[in-house]
Amino acid sequence: MPLSEIFFLGIVLYLLYRFIFNFFVPIVRTTKQVREQFRNMQDSMRNPGGPGGPGGPFQHSYTHPPEEPQPKKTDARSSSSGNARPSGNTGSSNNNTMGEYIDFEEVK
Image 1 (cartoon, rainbow, N blue to C red):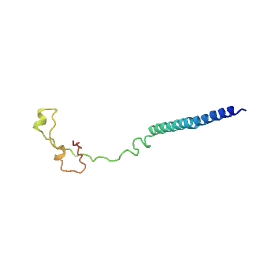
Image 2: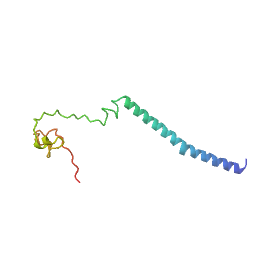
Image 3: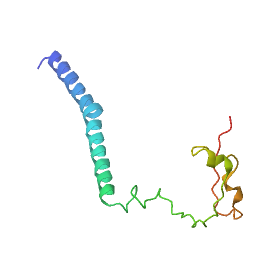
Image 4: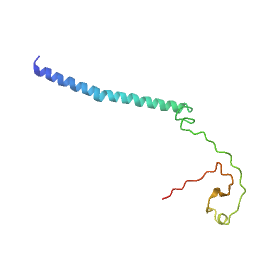
């Protein structure tokens, strides 16, 4: 076997080695990981009590207290136009501040 054939065979084996371990193996690993993620997602959709579904780790369990009915007040501004909004804080008439929701307003 001449030296040139050995050299050529060495180059071909080296390129084949690099192709397998730098291209083929990462594709196989990625494909396996993506399939596993799809399988986990499908399982979580079938079982809503699992992670990611309703009642999962990102679902908070806070329940709002029942609101007490407020007496209706007639406002001259709101009665003249059906689409007009009364100005001012809507929650100021409520004496009970526990459980009151305050809207966040962005300040520029």
